[in-house]
Amino acid sequence: MDKVVALILAGGQGQRLSILAEERAKPAVPFGGKYRIIDFTLSNCVNSGIYKVGVLTQYRPHSLLEHIGAGRPWDLDREHAGVSILQPYTGRHFGDWYQGTADAVYKNLSFLDEVRADTVLILAGDHIYKMDYSHLVAYHRAKKAHVTVGVIEVPWEEAHRFGIVTLNDDGQVVSFEEKPAHPRSNLGSMGIYVFSRAVLHQVLLTDARRPGSTHDFGKDILPGMVGEYRVFGYLFKGYWRDVGTVKAYWEANMEFLEDPPPLDLHNGEARVRTRPQDRPPAWIGPTASLEKSLICHGSRIKGAIRRSVLSQGVVVEEGALVEDSILFEDVVVQRGAKVRHAVVDKEAVIGEGATIGYTDDNTPNQEEPDNLFAGITLVGKRAVVPPFTHIGRNVKVMPGVTAEDFPADRLIPSGATVAPRPTPAPNQRIPIG
Image 1 (cartoon, rainbow, N blue to C red):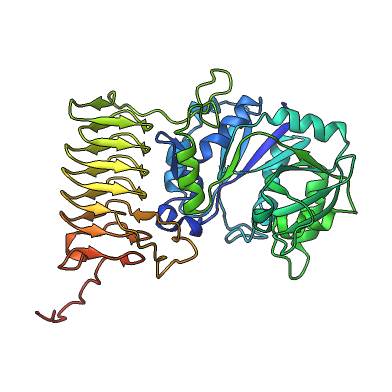
Image 2 (cartoon, helix red, strand yellow; image 1 turned 180 degrees about the horizontal axis):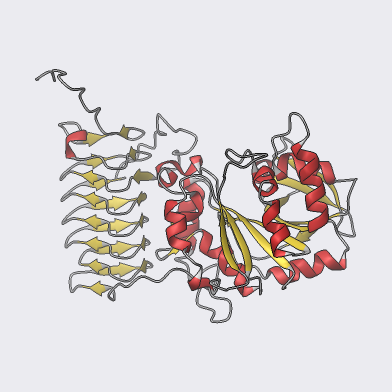
């Protein structure tokens, strides 16, 4: 695989993940307690023998850059290979932000020229799966394909959400439709493409000059190649999850609480790697109770945890209850608080006696009804929920809110949003009462 280079598209804004991706790139969102979403794609690369990797970033890249660093946890800190972070820049001929997935690769063609690979593997950085890409590349070469698309069977009722591929008996793609209203098949594109480098260069140059193009692989590049080039589909039969929505993200985390989990994260030869942190062991107190949960290093548990995923450094005090929830790093759930069907971002504090999600009212969020409708409440990074506050379902508690941002009665109905109060302008009088 020394002539293969992987490009990971990691610049998406992740709007459908709401405040979970507001201050970080979507691939940098924590998953499964100790991982970041991009860990799965990076680990797939090195486990497949691919050590030339470019990560294309754009939106809020800071936490992603800090997490990847020089690539050492993935054995990518190599002198003549390794990982390269590719960000937008202003150059002599073009610059500005990436305008689409294809445009992002087009603006980094010089990187592909430098690494001298003959095969380019283009990957999404926001999917949960394990895959040996060497089999995909071997299939691509055996078919003498110009491009090969990774596809997976999806439920018919969800097919309209995907790029849908139709194959003939030889595996050749006869149609590619992006999110069709009436799908012809239920083979969905995984956002994984293997290109012969010369062909990739050619189609990207053509697309860059095409008026009206959105410069997207799924919308423009692949549909335009069908019938003109040798386009094949590679059927993947393993576990694969697109976690681009709050509902899908929560469900995927919950799936890893099953026995056995959908993926073996502990396989020594094909394990999922991540950046290690220097944390003490988790501590479980005499008053704690645990049921079907993932608890990471540094956590201190005195309360009850049921069907939940706790990242590193979480504190759950005596008498508190966390169920069907996901807590990011260093969250504190104080004495007697109860949290259900929630995702709580890092360093948030749930005050004593507060409750989240304990209601039958499932009113969608008024600001984001398309993203927050499944009964899951989001609590943003470093938010402080004051004691004895009662929060419904599909609520959005914005990052950094404090006790002063909550109403006096401490009642937050389902579908509401708690946001920081505006800072008064200088010399502005604040009404009393």
